[in-house]
Length: 224
Image (cartoon, rainbow, N blue to C red; front, side, top):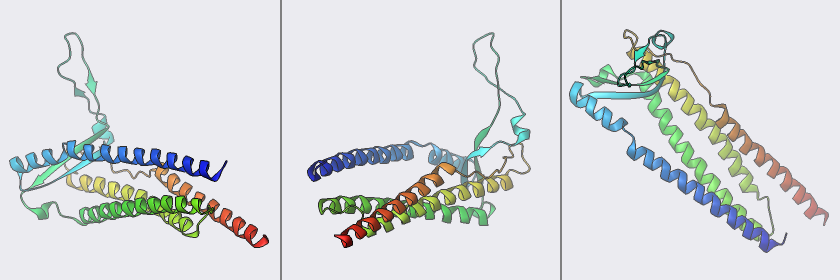
């Protein structure tokens, strides 16, 4: 393939990549603006207290899962029972101290870290793509800084995944503390999203392949 053909192919791939990223960003903001959590929290605080939190995607405890709930509004002659496997909970209080805890603070800091790390990872990936395009036009394929940027991007991906998993677990244990004397006691089980970690490891693995390619390229240049 000629150099011009390679550059055209890269431009096409970049256009597809930008389109996919743009669609993901659009879907993210649509989900943020259409979510009912802020409205539900405001409604709870107006009716029951001045302070409140909403904890989502709680795992049901075995005791709660064994409890059947009648499904209402079915056509005549039909009967159905429902079981709760996961649920959301909104908790309100008259004072902020009733909801304040070390777990809540750590959740906030972890979530902030995940947002900043995800932004840094995105910037590194974009910089690596732009640098790769520039170096291809110069006839080079494995710039050293691209390898460093991709390695950091993969490490940040793993850190974001672990930070999100830890934050979710702390939220579940916080809900367990708040609801321990109620019927709706959740089951606080730690989950690790292996897929996100494998994706980060894959990026680091690709960076190592590029590093080997650069070393081979340098050896060939010295030989010539």
